[in-house]
Length: 145
Image (cartoon, rainbow, N blue to C red; front, side, top):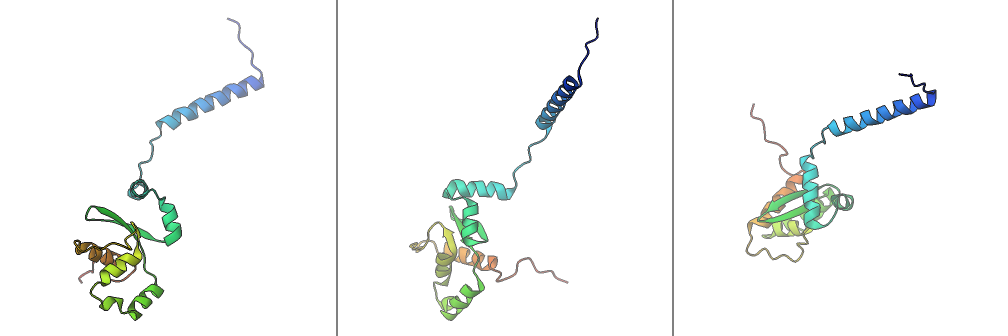
């Protein structure tokens, strides 16, 4: 059988084809990385709110998500200036302080008109988590020595 002569160009093309085939084979063999809990949560939030999480983070800074009583709430951190104003306004001395805090720092859904008359625990829970997220209270369990 006669030997086929190849030119350097044909050799280079053949080599390139092999590399491409080899890369395609490797690409299909590579495992697709699993999504993190944060990525899964972000997708769920975006599906629920129809608002991209990055837009919320750009607008409000750090945010957290908390499901309470079959509702998903997104809230932001309280700043030092906001805390000083709440103290000056004696918000923390009022009976409905948890409602006032929840209404000010929950960014989704719009709770500004919520009554919460039948849900005593929801604003309290939100208020507690907002305060913890803002640095008030322990961030971890204390260690007994």
